[in-house]
Length: 102
Image (cartoon, rainbow, N blue to C red; front, side):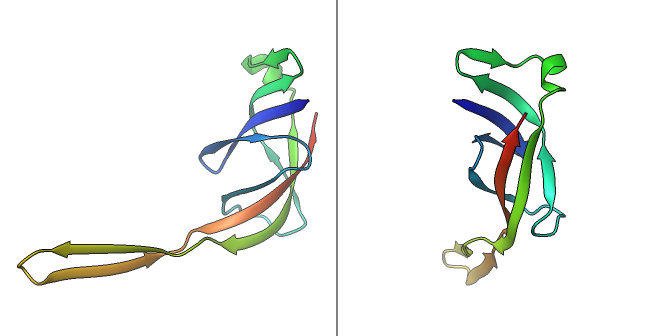
């Protein structure tokens, strides 16, 4: 089984061909193709991690859709002072499908 560890949006993801991953928002339109930088490549028993060899490896992915993450509610409260603060956050995300590892 061939899989790769790629850097995607400040995180590292383990991907193989056909996987759907969700990463931080990318500036790419749905349907377009992007390349993700590989950090490690595993092909059965062979592991490639040298920078010179990884320069030849390309992980190609297709942007499926742009979406927003689940709402996170941030609340701050201090006792006996009357201080309350409530804030919400939704991350901007992109869903990507890995099409090839070459």
